[in-house]
Length: 228
Image 1 (tube, rainbow, N blue to C red):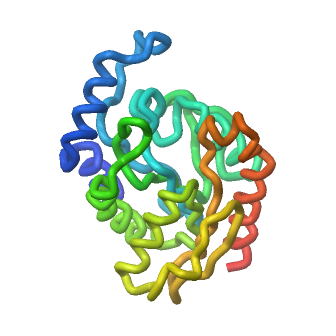
Image 2 (tube, rainbow, N blue to C red; image 1 turned 90 degrees about the vertical axis):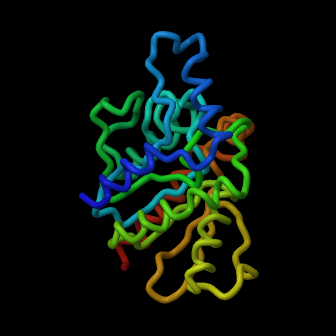
């Protein structure tokens, strides 16, 4: 119930006027391919298994993906590769997700983001990310079984490290160097951190990130939680 209350608060957040104006405008103008859609156009809450041992931390909703469908990573190319990967590694009930009502169920995993509104150019400002961080902190507190955090992309990686530093779980970020499929031990009682390239269309179309590379990340996450 507390997680549902938090999700409602996220949906109704108005802390970042620039982002709210941008999302509202996108929902009105729409993309031609989705002109028949009733765009979500609001901040997007996290979703998944409340008993999850793995937390995925992404960047922000896509303008015509999550901002359209109302569910993280749903309705865009990033989500296509992510959900195929989660299905193949046993974390998702189906390999595709196109709407928040399509029956997808996540097993042992919860998906959230550093920023909850679609930002212009996919680039939230540092202040906008800071505005959203209390939501992430509360999610972590309400997901007591999380043993592994998978940070998709450097912004998500940095966001989580800033959170750990603010909680005095780590004294310095010096030993945490972002890279693909790297594993880090954080403070006592805090989840392991695994960093990954983001499954953005830019990364997947150039071959910087392949589906096998992303599967390796979630296979690592599975091994870590099964050993804990």
